[in-house]
Image (tube, rainbow, N blue to C red; front, side, top):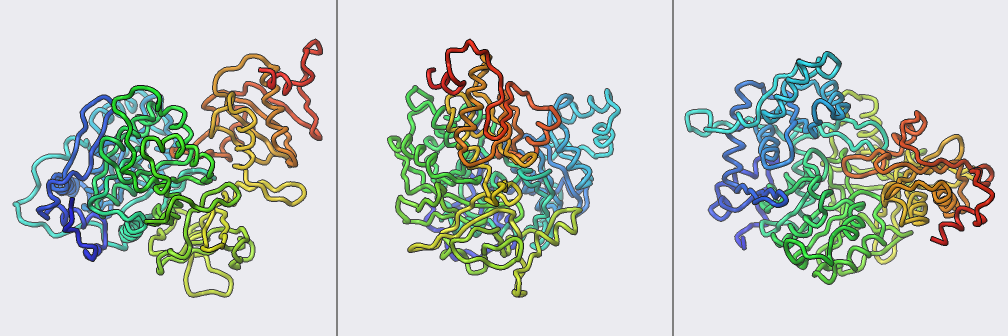
Length: 599
């Protein structure tokens, strides 16, 4: 236990400056900062002292070939090496652009092309093996990707480690200053192509300090995370670990998807106190957590203080199901920490969790709250705004969420007009401060206390002919619930098309019988009473585009369907509520839905 931790420890202007302080304190220098777990292999760890020394060495070597302020593309796989390089770039005064490395030659290179064209990096850091694959691709191809990659200076990650450069004397700190951009992180792409957000070192430090206080993190905290380390929450928890002096145990998102139980086993083995998880993953873990099978260890989840649930919408029912499934293993309902964040505010915005808040959070219209408004920091202001008039709305009225905070980012790289509209919004008749427009809809419900509920995305709203505004996630949930045994959870997309609603749903497993497929479409239509559904499309598993954090990209699904690029299994058109699919009259069932009922 690290009882000598001083809660009045002075804040540092940037996250990197906390690292050498922990590394020099006798009680912390040998404390593990990060642990990396590979399923089935021995874990690797790095102490605060080791991490600080490695970061100093790497930053010194980067400074030999790059100038302060240069932009660097980071194309390393998830792991401790990626952690070292992210902090080393900050200490070297470089602007880091972490990107998930696409495979060569057959990977999807669109985001890599986007990052290279928009950020114009001077160099790219990758493993030697990855660089060899890139060079082979360049030699064998003459296309847009190969020509862009040839212009980059490639730096092997393995060659950055080694003896410290210099004469052994303390070098002056040349890292990113508070008001300087240290990171370009891309938005998730939920409502449009991912946009490059300019994150200053000071905004990031403020953001993780607010999160540290909100979750009551300290050097006794143990964080477990499988989230991608390239942006948003996965990246924030790297900084949060260093600022808090905590220990963070990591694994890859692919390891979690392959075997979700690894997440629970890591919580058990390392006695984790805090772990973030996207809302879509909770039903997945309930289904595939293997609670009734012998695993590598028996589960013990009573150490968890914060189960941080992210990615709106935050439905109460799946959370309750998760708690019910894992309460026998010690999971406390009081650990549930529904939270809200976005890239334009570094990551963290708020959480409804507070220490000692008990087991029950109020549910509104099926949703968990994402903020306890009366406990928001004084320097942070959140308001719900009429997006047409820019007037604040009263409690109980839905509107766009606006945020004014020292964590607000500087804007979108290369998008001056959009940056001005998004990052410098002003309330009508209020000129004292500017706000970030989140593009998220929310509502504040006041009973004994005031809670914020995030209800959906402004741009995703479907407007019915009668003027009713419908959030597509409501349609998607009802559609899935109509055939949960045949459809993939979290893999339904709803959007407006030609004045009607189109629903696209993925199958859990192949289905060949057309009458069953027609029955699925009819069930989906019947589940959406009062909504004018024009088309229901059943597609193969993996057809619906998603972000790296698992959010449905509805706009991309619409484009993909209209271009004929979906792996369509069955499509049904409805006119005035009438089912138009033609079935053999010899069927003994009066409708496809009747057939499903008999199965």
